[in-house]
Length: 419
Image 1 (cartoon, rainbow, N blue to C red):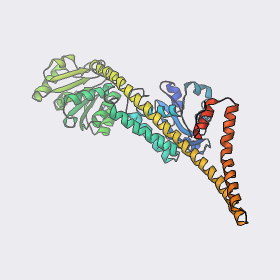
Image 2 (image 1 turned 120 degrees about the vertical axis):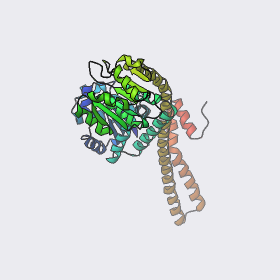
Image 3 (image 1 turned 135 degrees about the vertical axis):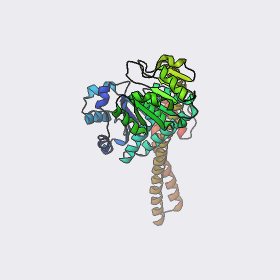
Image 4 (image 1 turned 180 degrees about the horizontal axis):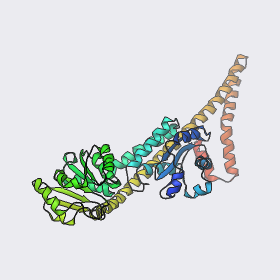
């Protein structure tokens, strides 16, 4: 048994190379089948995302170059192009690497939680294709428990480190429950889509999407069950919104002070939160001067993100300590399994010798041999056979001048250490 992790990620390889060696859904079944049929590979899991491609294996000793060659051949990438970007981890280093990946410690965004789900899906896919053996099962299940421990004992994933996430976190702090709040999203681009995902994840069901292009807004609305309006319709719907989050490419402000004053009047001065994450700004800065209107810009959110990222770095120190502790413990357990195999083999060998000599002695007695002579011969032969190999090991260690090896053999035989 030899655990191996081979891969590339956002730190070691360009986007172009990562695209070349990605295992998409259409390639994964064939890849797992080829690894399963390889006699040097006992079990395998392939993790492939936009930021990383990694192959985790339980392999026969000295098989890592074969796995590298297989990756090159499978993707038709010349080894000289691939190898400079590869990282290779074996045994405890491989165990530790997988744990760091699952905990978000090796991610582009420190502590991001999505990677754990991706690793779990990769493991599930390998299971489905019968590519997981007992060692891989234990390795990944232990990794998932470590990731849970890190999330429980540290706050590495608890702080907003994206502008979209920060906007939702800010809304949660100001409003007691997003489930009762109505949110107006202005725009329908990637940032607003991320905001919508975070809102939905926090139980928000009352979402209005305002966008210049209705088709794009409809696509977003269908995913989150939102209502769609056009940009010119914002004034008549603004009073319904408790929270307004805006991110468009408009060169001029879309929401002005007068528009907000009218909305607040219609709301009987119930407070409104405005989060402007557009550059140039979508909301006039004078809106922040109004009572009951709370305006935050992208600069305000970025300061929150920067502060939270520093906090995640602090939490990562504790997370790294947990990973180091757990990977060492798992490696010790794996080594103990090798000891179990050795003990079983040793007991089997000794028992085979015992049965062989016992059978000879019984045959001698049945043939009329003197019982005392038969027992003496049995004891002598049994002793000589059992001590033969240890005796040769002691002689070899002494002759080759290896006192450390000699001491280990003496200790294993229950002898006193040599002076």
